[in-house]
Image 1 (tube, rainbow, N blue to C red):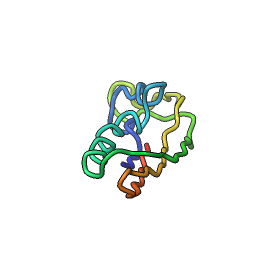
Image 2 (cartoon, rainbow, N blue to C red; image 1 turned 135 degrees about the vertical axis):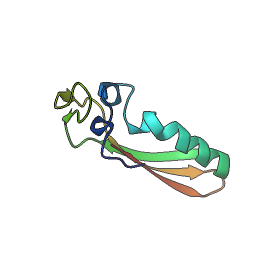
Image 3 (cartoon, rainbow, N blue to C red; image 1 turned 90 degrees about the vertical axis):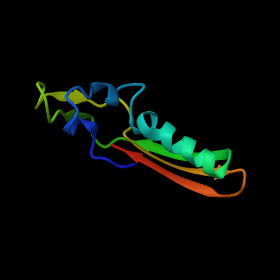
Length: 94
């Protein structure tokens, strides 16, 4: 799941960019649940995360143009090894 960021369309996107937010916690449960249902349990994970920008600009609604801080990683990459031997590649990014 790769998107430019929710600040473009969401009028109050702050919660996506603070602790508890981010692409992995926002959409990851849906994708991971599907992978585990289809391919079985995961026995190991390798991952890395980062963020390129320390702030974002709201693009819609009453707060358009307001700058909000980015406190979390907005790009997550990982490889999951399933018990059956299959590898899944995960990329989640705002």
